Length: 507
Image (tube, rainbow, N blue to C red; front, side, top):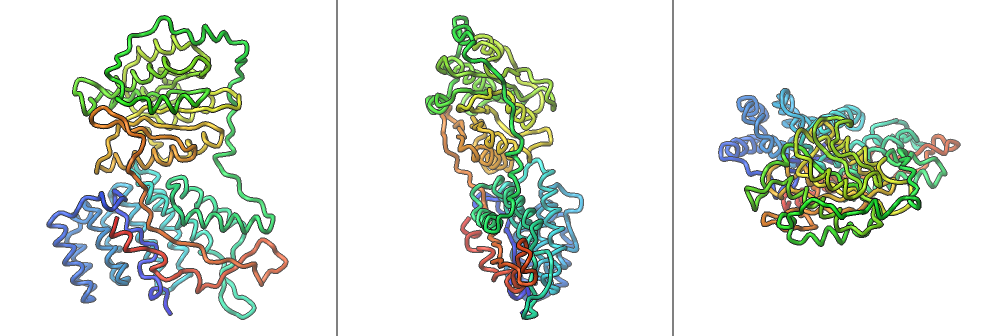
């Protein structure tokens, strides 16, 4: 039986720019008419007509990624692989943005896996998925649910697109070496950083870790756990605590600017011994909040930071770092490790700053790892922001948060982003989700009436359920404990075990 008969639609994420299908923008009337024409010709097996439609409406498809997605989804779900292959040759996204390029190369990888040549063509599919991941890393608005699924697929191919041999019965088998397992483990770990709820990636990772543990082979180190922080050597017992926490001369607070139910934040922060306030000073923070056109987002964040400094108990050590000015690590207006200045001085500095410039969020978060003491206690970075990194490091934020968590530093976020349908807001919440998950931090969402919620509705959408086949100890090299094998026909399960089309429709 041909591979295409088994898995038409293999790996199909049914991805759109918004990822969460219930939130994606519907096709306009012209795009819907074109999609109906494509479906009609495809059902009648008119490949030439379908390809001509793509060529004749090149620009319409190029600027409507949802139309491209819906068309390819239909072709692959209904096993029109030959038509899908020819459609992809037209490539409407040669000069497009990174999200579109990522989606194109993902679909290309899908079709390459389903090629009549079968399993040997997996190497081409692997290259296409690698390109999709590269494009996502370059994107300003990547979808992290999609990113996670691409990494899961790359991990799957790291195992299955490798050595071919035969067993004692002369049946074709795939040989898996330790280095292939190491590569796959890193991909599955990445998948879980971008979407911690990706259950299939979790299972695949557990499978490989159990294999290595069973044979006593070394498990590749978690990359973000190796970057251990040195911390600050602070002689806390010699500090003049009364002087450090003196708050006798303070700026005047405007309590009307605080979120209505700010106690949610105080309750969490009161559990920590050391806190670094990471305050967004980027230009967009000067924009008004939804409930008061005369009130800027920065004014609210500034008053909240001052209020936190005022309310924390005396034995909590507070520092601060600003995010703004320039895309570097030198121009931070605020750069105060814990116990470096008194609360009074810190509050006066926070009161004097004003928003300006881009958002080097990842650089500044990375700096916080050296701003805590070496003490074993509860540490928190508390980010107050209205957006994402704008200095070309948005795709490093989750890794930075994972590194902080591996060193015992929690991360929580106070966000001015309202949940809406625009891609930027959904991207921000997907990033905040993966940033706070490693330390089980909180995301506090400002509401349109000036209130506060500590729960967001965003959930990463994952529809790729590629699960590794069962791997047995190799029969060909019984003396080599590091080799595993599995039969080629077991590489790809039936399509309905890979993609849940019904789930995609419900979403």
